[in-house]
Length: 117
Length: 114
Image 1 (cartoon, rainbow over the protein chains, first blue to last red):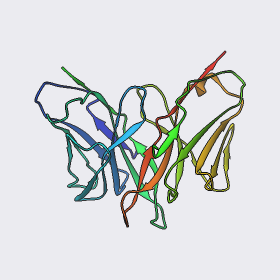
Image 2 (image 1 turned 90 degrees about the vertical axis):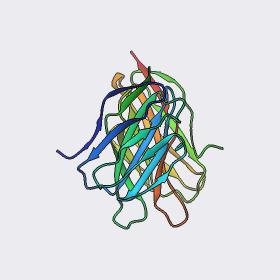
Image 3 (image 1 turned 30 degrees about the vertical axis):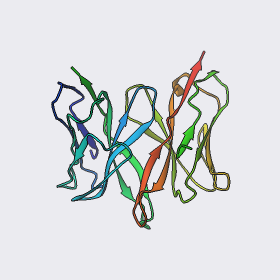
Image 4 (image 1 turned 45 degrees about the horizontal axis):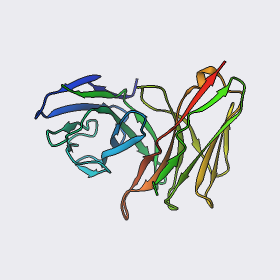
């Protein structure tokens, strides 16, 4: 079955530590996204990538980094510069509309809950 | 003004009730619109896309009003299982000449009680 896989489901970060969240998709989608969700809040965009080897900052990129070396993979690193990393992180992917003017619906992974020790 | 705004609720309704949510967006160039449903600590799941002509899927009806820049979701005959957070998503232009980026509202909480 095609889908998008995030791991781990739960992750704990120590002070000053960098941690990496994995996101893999086998849907052959060009676009991939990382969102952060805090309790009672909507999803805020951290980074996005519309094509392999290219990515753009979203609304809250500070303290995070990404790479897109392969179409299937879009890992997110939460660096020590991110002072409030505790949140639910969601990875998503989407295809382009046939006319190329917009992206279609999002497919989500099951999320990673990151907490600080 | 936020790019995508929703009333967070909660909307507390009895089973069988009809409930409507609105979502406003600020970017008039927005191209596509969606409603997602999210259960607590789970990933959002697509409920329905929103088309200019309006569309219906069973008990759910979505409407788009481009002139007033809002979309709506109507749920008829509410079920207990409809209790969730409903997220409005608008695809906005990322940058000049760039692709469209899905932008989320903060969600509207619905609680359906017996």
